[in-house]
Length: 485
Image (cartoon, rainbow, N blue to C red; front, side, top):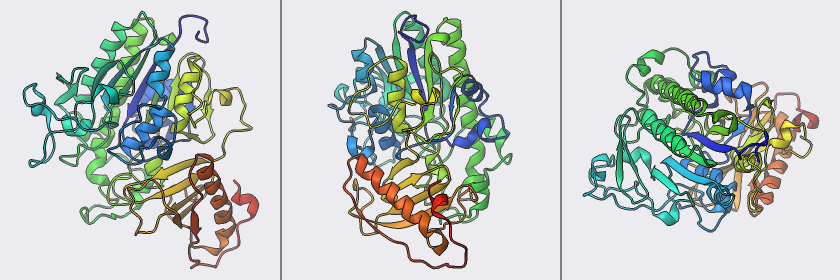
């Protein structure tokens, strides 16, 4: 039963791709990009310190589906399929009597070929010498979802005004309109068709991820122009390019791409508003739990040679809010919340038992002021560009990276080297790495303890962490009390 004592609440996940937390007005963005998100977060629960546990598309999705860390579920890099035997959101809701549906980008299956006789060939966006792939998903690899309208790698099988998804029978389905709108239309149709029964709908958008085959952020017509040159987040404005492909742009690809990126986010928020209007018109809004979150953020090639896969806020911090029964008036949570905590939260809010396999925790106790046992840091695993681990507290960020001879496509390393330390209280944009300063030795020691403890807690073997070389000694020392903040 829902908190109101009526029919069990419906649950909708509105999941975006590569969206920075500071796109929201609640985080200081002045462009009014997300008024619907901001309004729902104020009414419901705003998770102000929300972090991915793996800043890569596929692994982040596996963590959100299963409530487990990437090294636990086995999807620690892109291209790995979700384990069929592990309990997840879809199987848990189905066992509780819910209808389940998935729409959009999946990125958790082995590739099936795109048939040349079902129209699917028209949507292939790969290189000319590649075989069409990345679209249909075998039923056994759909995570247990019943209704299916998705593409395994949506950026490879669609474009901004050319949306192709695949149904339960692997048939290509062409949806009209800008891709965000096309997918939102499909969501609204699903909601209308299932309005008389409890449903769990997971909708995974590609936006505001870049369109791979052109390396661009294609907003709806007119939206890029609306936001180009308007406002640049301070970290992006301060950082020079670290990518030889963008030598003429201050801040990596920021000024080339940011207008389109903001435009995509504006359209996503408008889509969220359309969904809310539909729920309201069907008398479902008061009994529907809505989660809005993203898989990771975007640093526009300022931290490495692409857009994510680093320990920085611009890679790992995402906008998150929950709205609906049991979540209204929750206020703004200040605790560190991970993507891995959200599956347990949804199940708890729907009154469904949380599988013992889930490593995340429900945030509902936080809404009641029960904060004593909540972790004081977010834990992050990193792969592909580099192999790393990080912990983030309210004040400090500490990261270690495997030596260069260790493949970043491995699940873990026996050895890591201290690589980053930031004081987020005095350096919120992470412009000064303190890992080699003598004054911060107490912080390094405390954060190393925290990192090792979290790694062991989730089932990783304890690695050896090599200390960074001290190169700067000219400051007063940080106290141990400050190190624990």
